[in-house]
Image (cartoon, rainbow, N blue to C red; front, side):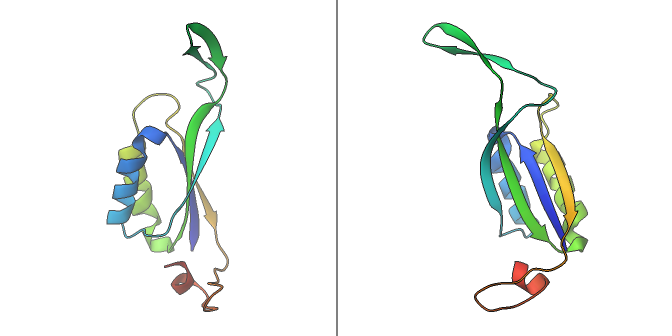
Length: 113
């Protein structure tokens, strides 16, 4: 099993979520985050005053999947999350030793689905 963690723009979430559903991903954790990378700070406007926004709003999606699904999920994320602009995000892949569903005590890939 692998854990896929991806950081994307909030504006592309609906399309990415739909693409993941088509790949069979029903379980997903989503966290609102803010980050800074190569795009650095942007200038915002509030009540006519300009101010520097150091962090950009992002969403972090986390899912644990069977290893055989990893490449198709990566392809789906890349297709729908990419705008071609700096700040599109990142994808991280981690090995997962074990998954356990607390309610039923099931282990392995059956506990993930």
